[in-house]
Structure formats: C-alpha cells, structure tokens
Image (cartoon, rainbow, N blue to C red):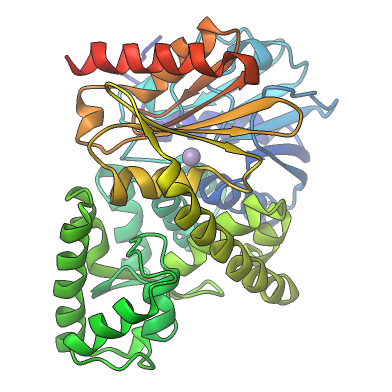
Length: 436
Ligand SMILES: [Mn+2]
C-alpha cells in the first residue's frame, strides 16, 4: 500500500518512536557493503543513545530463525519477505530498499521504512545505509555517519541523486567528506591499482605486458601513486582508461560513474571510498562481515586483518574471472555461466555484465556442494529500462520451487541443481518477452 502523504523522514521518526521503548535491539543485516554500513550506522547511533545491541550478518532470510528479543531490526532485508516478518513475535523495525512483496501482518509493533512505500526510487536514489542514516539523524546528533551511508550508496552501485545526493552534500558541507576531481581507482601504485581494480574492471590482470605498454603510451611510471597524480596526469589516465574500456566493449554508462570525481571520506579509517567499499565486500564474502563492521566502528586490529582479506579475495576473483570468461554460454536473450562452488559469483556477474559482455543480461549459477544453486543476475541500467531482473528472478525461481528477487539491475535466486535447465529456459523466455 502506498501512502504518498508520508515521507521517509516521517517513517524514520516512527522507527525512533518504537526504538525509544527498548534498551536493547537485535539487529539483522545483509553481509554486503550496504548492509554492513547500515549496521554500523544503527549500531553507532544506538550506542550514542545508550542502548545495547547484538548484530548478526545474513546472506538472506530463506532459512531465517528469529531470536526471542523484544525488538528486532532488519536492515537491507525484510521488505521482500512479508511471510517471514509476519511470524516474528517482537517489535519490528525494517529499514530496507528492496521491493516490498506482500503485506506484513505484524504480531506486535512494526515500522517499515522503505522508499518504495513513499514513492521514492530504491534502486538508485537511496539504499539501506541511507535509510539507516536518516533514521540515525532522528535518533540523535549523528550527521558524521553520512560517510558510512556513502559506502552503501557506492556498494549498491546507486547514483548520487535525490536522497543520495543530499547525503553526499551533507557529508561535504560538514567537512566529513571531500569530492575531488579524479578517477575511481583504488589507492596504491598505478600498476597495482589498474590490475586490481574491480570497478572499473580494466582487464589487466595477468596481462603485464599490455599494462606496461598502456602506461608508457601515456607517459606515466607504474610506481606513481594514484592518490598523488596531478590534474593533468589524471586527465591523461582518464582518457586512456575510456579508450581501453571502449575497446573492451564495456557498457558506456560506466564512464560517468568512474571518471570525474573521487570521494574522500575524511572521518573514516580508509579515506578512499572505493577502497573501503571493496574491502567491506571482500570481508563479507570471506565470511568476515564482523571484521568489516569492527573496522567501521574504529577497531585498528580489525583494519589490519581486513586489508589482508581484501587483497586475497580480489586476487581470487580476478583469477576466477580470467579462467571462467571463456565458459560463458549464450542463448537468445541472456548469457549464462554455470560454475561449481566458486567463492563469490556476484562480482563475476557484475564485471561480465558491465565490462565484458554488456549487451545481454548475464546469469551466473553457482552450484554449491550441497546441491543448492545460488544465482546472480546482472544487467546494465540501459537494458533494465525495459526489463526487471528482480521480477524475472522471482517468477523463474517460483516456477522451479525456488525463491528469487532483488533489484531491476541486480537480482538473485536460490534453486535446486536439477532445475537449472528449466530455470534458465524460463529466464531466457521472460527476458525475450520483456525486451520484445
Ligand atoms: Mn542494499
């Protein structure tokens, strides 16, 4: 039910009202950069309000067993699982930007803060960490947490428009963040940054010679630090990167996202926003979401550990990708890749859909050891103008007794191994139907 009279801020106020009745909250959040940042924002705000919490990081709510705490907060999840939410015997706060699915019939108090419920776009204009930030500001003087919300915005590949734009403006005007001309690249020397970057993915991993040629053509030394390039050097590098991406056949929509500005987070332990997002995602995928969470709360030991996890994880992804890209199959309206027990499929799906094969949606199916299949579906926002991957995943999974959902450009599903063929056929059929 849409209630256009209410705003997100009104809903956040209601959430704070419900919060005020409790001294302890059980928090459940998603294990990616947006979810972990949202968790850190709420945790900090609760601590400052002298409330206690326990936080758990989840991949999803499929096998969810609720605890018996009086107040349970769901971040970056919950909206799509009305049945699960309706069974929980506790006061509930849901701060989520995924499309609501069905009506939640709460056993006790419920505040559901979701942009879709108030006519705001939840795909590009606000993410869970942005909603958490708006809520935190209603709870106390928490505007310094805007920089954590920025991590979630970047992590979910949203745009700095509308609510997200306001969050960035606030962070800048209070001096917590700075926007500088630059390129979206991790910090470090040029050679390493160009090789290890996932967004933009530049396809230099295990292509040492090509990389040397690339750098010498633009007259830059590989040892030069990315953060120390002057404006002229940034410009040269940006031009060369655009040329390379064009040659690779990358989706042109990535250019405006990676070239032009660079966000510096002055009040967080890692200043380069891109690096921080990569690190949080790496920790989450490595089963170390709590390490990322502790880094956000300022733990220095956790930071040292997180840096190691990140380097190892990115190397694994790049290696996996260079092996698997030849195995991508094509059908009428999609491309797909079936892999066995990969460490992470979503970055592979993202890179394939944005940088290497952007002309059709890409479906990556990861067969886990227990026979369950985790599906990641990705496409560009250009294709997503016509087609909704969340809907396609939901319907195709439903057909084979699985579950699916997500966003228009990035969605997923869980199905059984025996159903892969039938599932892919349905995905292809629905994509063709929507694109026609
Ligand atoms: Mn999210």
